[in-house]
Image (cartoon, rainbow, N blue to C red):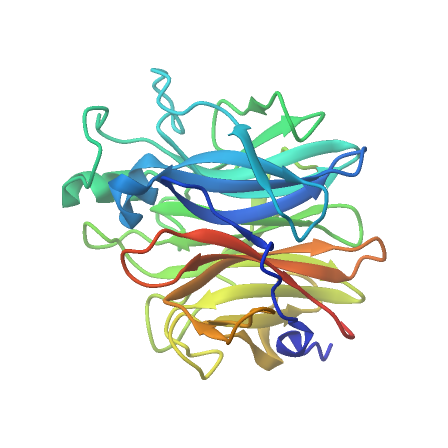
Length: 339
C-alpha cells in the first residue's frame, strides 16, 4: 500500500466549480443514476446568516450534471428542515455521504436540533450555537432513485455512547462496502467534557451487515493525535485492492507535517487499525486551476471521491472557503495516474 495521493491531483477545469448565489455551499458527495446523470449532494445555508451558521441553518440539496466534472445545476432540497416536527434531526441536515448498494441509494448525514431560531436570519448567541453542535448525530435515508423520495430513520443510525470517546457528538459519516460485503462507517466523535466544547475530537469506525445497520462500534478511536485533543475530522473512507484508505482533515498538521487544516492520507489492512500512509500529505490548502495560477485558500475540506468504472478514484470533491467572509463552494478535482 504505497498510494501517493498528491501526485494523482490534476488541474481543475473552470466548470468544475459549483456555487449558488445567496447560499453557502459545503460538503459534496456524488453518485450516478441508471440513465448516466450525475447527482451532487451538498449542504447549503443562507449566505446572509454567515459561514458559522452551518451548525444552525444547514439543509441538504442536490444538483445534476451530465459529466462528473460539471457544470452542475441545482435542482431541489432533499427534504425540508424546520417543518415543525420535533425530532432529533428536525432542524438541520449536513455532511451528506451517498452510497449506492444493491440498486438502492443510502444518504448518510449529520442531523441535529436546538432552540427555536425561526425568527433569526443571522448569527445566534454562543449558547444556542453549541446546543446545536452538541446535539449532532448520524442518520441515514434511503431511496430507489437519487432524485428521491427519501425515507429517513426515526432515530439516528449511529448515536453517541455516553462515557465513551464519542459520548457527546457523532458526525461526519463516511461509508464503504468492505471486501466481504459489510458496511464500514468512519466518523467523527466528540467526547464528553467541559462545556460548551466538550472533550477530544477523534475519528473512529463501526461495522454493519447492511446499510441501515445496526452498526457495531469499535470501542476506541482509530485515529487520534497524541499531542492535541482536536485530532482529525471530515474522514472519507474507501476499500481498494487489499486494504482500506481514508482522507482526513488534519487539524494541527501533525500527521501531514504540513500546514494546519491540510488533508492526510491514512491506510489500514482491515478497516480497524489505521496509520498514516508513507505519503501522508494528500493535499494542502491550494487549488491548482487549469485556467489560472494556483490559488491559496483558507479551507479545502470535506474530501469525497468519485470512482470510475474500473473502481479507481477519478474525481476528488472538496468544499472551499477562499477567505474569511467569502461565499463557499464545491470543486471537483480530476485525478489521474496510478492509485
